[in-house]
Length: 157
Image (tube, rainbow, N blue to C red; front, top):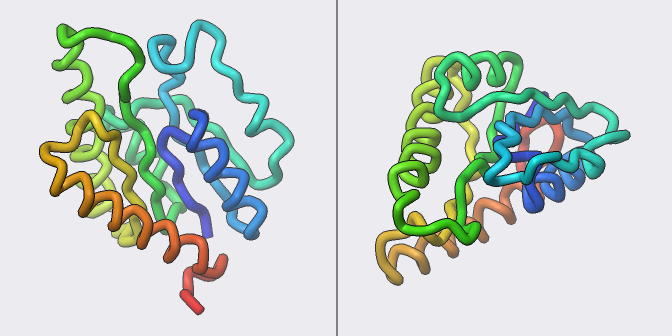
């Protein structure tokens, strides 16, 4: 079983990858390593030395990159997003393209590849209302609990 972690080279993603490896999962990381997100020299040290981790540099907005990264995966933890990094409102189009289009491309590729398990995290900047934020936060907590209790064979105790 291999878990695809989009955004797995980021701060939260690298911790999720470590936890999955610790629990016996093989992991493939798909990350764009964009300089506006990771800086000019991305720090991949948290991923180095982890057994069973493959890092693929690619973009969730690319159908080809996502389809290739999904090969052999049976679940996805989707963390790739552009979040509040001190950029201004003029970057709204890039936020929407990265976050919404990236998620749509991923969901379409998962459907075509028959990958049915997804844990989705959403940046607060993409949330429409406080009510939706609360529901999403609760869903993320439930998804995290389900993911942390699942066994490497995919079953849930």
